[in-house]
Amino acid sequence: MFTTRLGGVSVGSYLSLNLASHVGDASAAVATNRRRCVRALGITPGRLAEAEQVHGSGVGAVGKNAPAPSAPRVPLPGVDALVTAVPGVWLAVYSADCVPVLLLDAASPAVAAIHAGWRGTAAGIVEATLLRMRELFGTAPGRCTAVLGPAIGGCCYEVDTPVAEAMRGGPWWPEAARPTGPERWHLDLRVAIRRQLTALGVPDEGVTSVPHCTACRADLFFSHRRDGVTGRMGAYVCLTG
Image 1 (cartoon, rainbow, N blue to C red):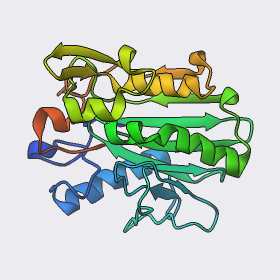
Image 2: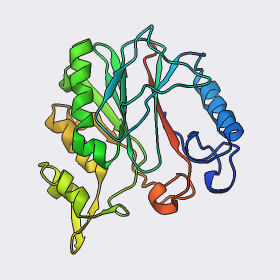
Image 3: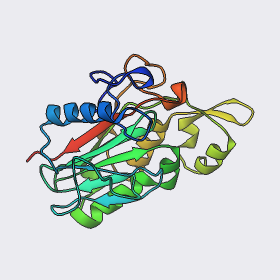
Image 4: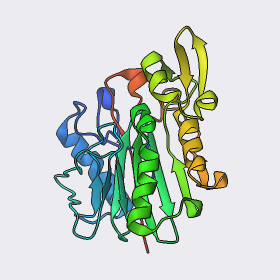
């Protein structure tokens, strides 16, 4: 599931379903918003795991006895992706422009939730997640499917030289980045991540992208690039069998 900004109780810059507790929103509003999501998904206490999200390439594994508290939640430190093969354990990442990526290996079965901003994308968070799934669960990319959630699009995401220097060594850069001026590019992170996935062996027909740009759709999504102070949406995945 991917949330929008709709359906919560937050006000002002966080209107209305802000799920992040670190962006300045009232803690009571965030708690109410999170309870609404938990109820909607049928998540039982202690069955939701979250990543700290440090814009890196760390991957955390969530097992039957791994910490997955619900209230208060303690994110797994130092990671931007989570993997599990335990049915009934939910994985969550939060974003307001970065790409939330949900992966499924139906054969193992196993799932992953990835928070991929430009730093994580450049650092190889997608590849690191697939490697961890292979190590732990025997996952083969060729049997995986992926969904890329709402994120800022190439229409609105302008980057400069430091970002380009970190990313343009990738073979996907010419397709994902469009020059717009001296040392400026418009970057489509979902194109970059899609090409990373397919280069790793995930079938192209198995990769789906939610089409919306978070910066374009102020009615539906939070966007840090657009608004600065803003909330975060959630992306959730769980094995139900």
